[in-house]
Length: 135
Image (cartoon, rainbow, N blue to C red):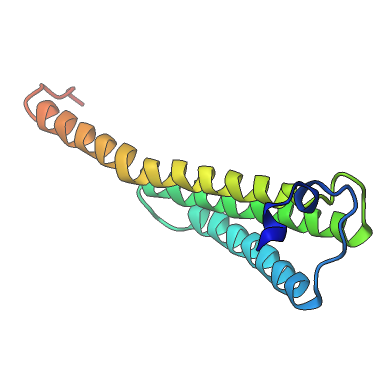
């Protein structure tokens, strides 16, 4: 545990390769993120969803696909022992980025979608009384 708090652990220019089980787990997680992101993007395009739900699914798919590919790229850098790009701090940066992106998607789903649906319902309620164009 004290190793996690040391400066040298996070900022070592060429850290040691992952332990075999940890490397395998990270490779599976990054690949799964990319595949699930790709499936979500395809589902968002093909499914007959509401416009706002489709946008949320597209955003989630973009997040997962991007972060999966960035994770695989980092795994490659660690495997090839590329200086600076294989530092462990990049995993923390990756984790913070995915958490912020997930927070923005959750905010969109929890705040923006209900607000847009309420505005749509209000507009329909008001347009009910407006004269329609003759055909």
